[in-house]
Length: 296
Ligand code: A3P
Image (cartoon, rainbow, N blue to C red; front, side, top):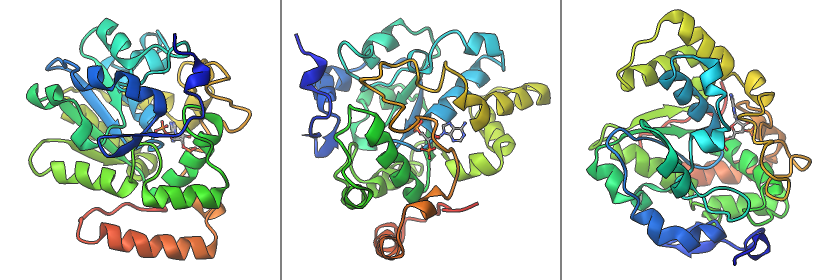
């Protein structure tokens, strides 16, 4: 029997060229063979891009703003994470998905080339949420302090170096956001940005509603905006991850619902780190056509 001691705070495992959370490797082949359903809705993000936020928005949309229904279960159960495997600490993504009634919301951080084939074959709806790299790096650093599925991050400076070179779980942020962006040319991925959602939730949530082919009135829309605001979500035990065992997520190290803002990177990056980051960013992102704001 595998015990949590065997996989907590362990080094990442390289799978198909990507550094990955150690225990996820155990079920990798089953995950790759996962059979989707045509009405599955994929929520894809690089870690720490606002996945929980958009997951709750989507659940609210599907349930037409009925808060009681949305509070039926924890976010980790309502919107299972496809590749999740942490035996003894969390139910696996595959097991949860098999029990979830359709239409299922499927969360994943997988890079585009690792997403199981079945989702493409079934032409599932896909929503990608991107967040600016600097705030993702800061959020990922703090998350690695509290989430023991990740290796310990070291100092902020050490973590930033690893983030830049893609030696963190799910690999390079640059590659992740660019490859999903490129896919838009041949597949109708709804690609949205954390910064836009923060600045104008009404406009962005309307885009999602339209993409899903739904119509919801203004009253419901306002309810969704309120229920999924950072202030409400951070105090909602169904979505703020406080239900998970402390050995897995230690909120005394950093809250999961930490700050929920754009621009916190300014409190972390030194001038030298920022200059180096900007130069690398320019090289990596030039020609991609992808513009992501670092302040709003
Ligand atoms: P910070 O660490 O910068 O605060 P994910 O769900 O992909 O793991 O992303 C977590 C990040 O999204 C955290 O960022 C968290 O605070 C932020 N977040 C969660 N819910 C949010 C909301 N309703 N509004 C804004 N940001 C939110």
